[in-house]
Image: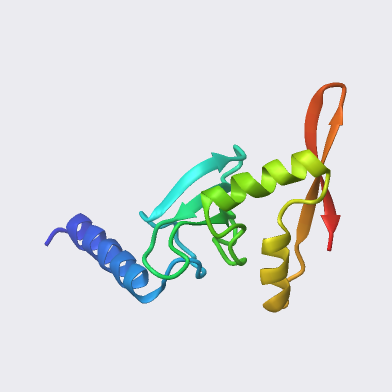
Length: 129
């Protein structure tokens, strides 16, 4: 094999092994083919749907350009994400309570976000739980 072919095969195998070994919703230090980006901040961070097999398949996770996907899932599904955001917009209550509870169970401290409208512009203000 050429060095390029060898390196490509090594990367493919490493990705296959990590994908097979780790179910959806678990951490990953590499951006996998089963990660479907749904939003980007323009700085290398994403919201993604984790399509790996497992009980959390379809969950929405955050990808951090520096740390990968180390935090618990944000929502269990796209439907749960949209429902949570709509509820937050309707009531003014914080979004991401499901994520905050899951993170707290793993000894992480994360923020929830409260919607605010000023001059007809929506923004999300960070709030600690």
